[in-house]
Image (tube, rainbow, N blue to C red; front, side, top):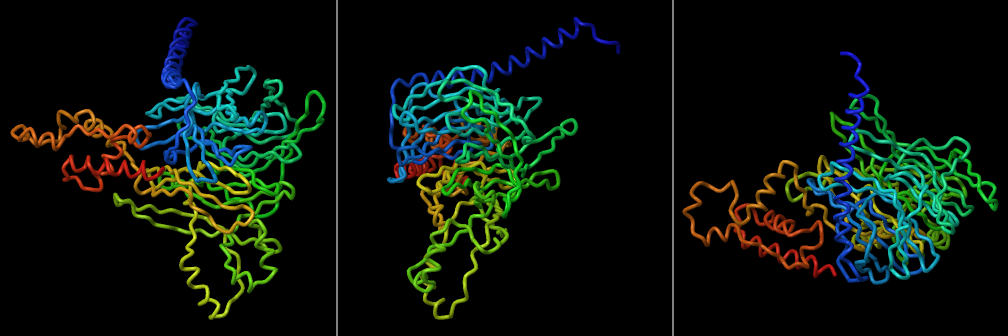
Length: 574
């Protein structure tokens, strides 16, 4: 074949451009449709509600002035469809209750965005970037917009300025003095992807973006890293994930475990100079993982929770999920695992004396003793559909207790039997927030084989005492709806053919009475307040009821049970 002429190249180039524009327009059309729905909101409405639906890659932030946590955005996948959110929820810490706040003109639906909260003006919640996915998960749109929620007035405002980072998700953003610092992330299209290691600063006084050019050797491009601001105004970056194409249709992922310090020099001048320095922390470092969640704890320490380590086994990926905590002491440049001490009874305190009480006032670090290595625990849970879920959990070894006499063991047997400890199940992509030294963990996900379990439970733990986890919102993952890909057509037929019957009816069904036909295929409609809470739709409750009653149950009875289950869930959870 000869070389293509310039005219042919132009035609091919135009076709590629047109294809890209068409795909982009489809994505933007979906976003525009959702924004049209949001534009119908004309007033701020705050209503009490059950806990938000299961989700991951949302943001959870502590209110700077009130005892509240703020949940925004996120995603949910039920096996067939991806749901994106732009809802705003408020969790009242004192009352252990949720409320949903509908605000006119919010940011478009998104996940994997970043949020930073600053105290000025009664509190401001800044949102940058993230991604939108079409329901079939085939199309992605990466945002590069910047929004601020004024917490005092509950008003969303889009800050339209140029010179900021390109569209991305999986990046990290922190508030540093009077700036927002954005680092890393990735952008993925249908054909290719790119990871970033650039750094941008947004000035909260002048509302301008600046691309920083730090000297020194910085981190390689990555997403999902840990990023924290030190009291001195420097920035810590740890870990993350990236992948690169090693040959056609073959990608190689990398779990980063390195650590860097982005230091500001020349503070006070018109333009600060920044420099990258590599850190070599001491202590017990986290095991390699991605999808971990991060927060800033008390005593100048950042923390890391959960995550997953994927292993390739016979052409499939098996993930080991974690629920452990690691602390990084920014002053000492030292990692150590968070160790649960367990609740101490008064008898224990009297027996151990003042020394034990002093240890109890610590924050989970076993000073003076080399930390013990993590211990892997394997749990098997059988779901209602017979699926055996094997969950690997890596936990820190418990503290070494001094030997006790037989009488002392008997004395505490009753307390230990009734005080069975609870803790979050292993997960990745959970949402974290710290308020008054208490860590809150919400949602996330874990996988068993090809099935994904998305969570909406809520746990807390006092980081000063590190005694025990508290369950604030419970969830049983085994009851979650999951639609297999092979069921897609069948489910569509069931929904669309609800009035006229399905293709699976026997040939003699024409001779059956009209009453029997109605009993098999009733027009099931639940109260709207039980069905407007995605992803728990009407079909969710009907499917769950049918699963409990068996395939031979009559539809009217299934519908009755579905209504009862929905009513119990929504009214019983408020």
